[in-house]
Amino acid sequence: MFVLSVKHSRKRTIVILAVLLVAVTAAIFISGMRGRVPQAECAGKKYSLSAGTNDERVAFFKQFGWKVDAEPVSEGDVTIPEKFDDVYVAYNNIQKEQGLDLEPYAGKTCRQWVYTVTNYHQRKAMRGTLMVYSGRVIGGDLSTPELNGFMTGFDGTKEEQNFSVNQPALARTNVGDLTNASSAPQASSAVEAKKPASSAVPANAWPTD
Image 1: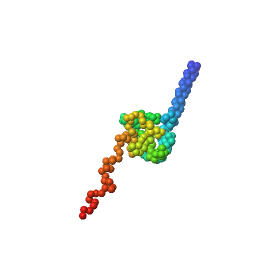
Image 2: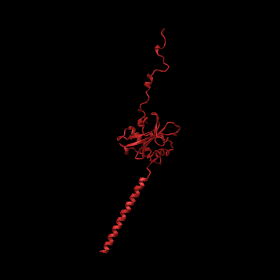
Image 3: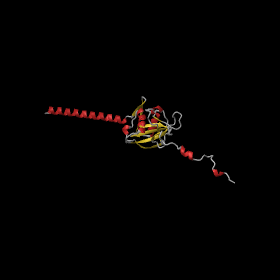
C-alpha cells in the first residue's frame, strides 16, 4: 500500500506541475500580446498604430515625415456605416493600400481627430485625419480643406486614389465628413450673378430736371 501511495503521489505532482507550466506559459503569452505595439505595413514599411494619447497621435504622423500642430483642429465620434456606399468603398481602398481595413469595424463608432499638417510639399493648408478605435488607428488620410482639392494616404502619394476609373473623387467637408468632391456643393455662382455689380448705377440715380 505504501508503494502504491508513493506512485500515486508522484503522478499527481507531475500533473500539477504540468498544469502550472501551461498556466505560466499562457500568462506570459497573454502579457506579451498585451504589451505588443499594434502595427501595420505600408509600401514595405511597418508603422505603429498606437494612438491612445495626443502625443502618440502626433508621433503617428512623424513616422511618415509629417509635422502637425499639437492641438487638433477638431475631434468627434464617427460611426462607420454597416454597409459601404461608393464613397466608403473608395475610402477603404485607400486604407487597404496602407495596410488597414475598415470592414471589420462596420457599424462601430470610433473617435476621429483632425490635425493641421505644416510641412506637406509646400502646401500651407493640409490636414491629417485619424480614425481611432480602442487606442489604435484603424483608418485615416491626408486631405486638403478645399472640396476641389485631393485626398491621399498617410505617405502622401496622391496616386493611391487611382484604383478604378469609376472611383469617386474623395474630399472632406468642413466638419470632417467624407464626401464625393465631384458632387459636393460648391459656392453658388448663380447667387453671385444675381448680386448687382459694385459699379452698376441705378436707373434713377441721375436727376431728371
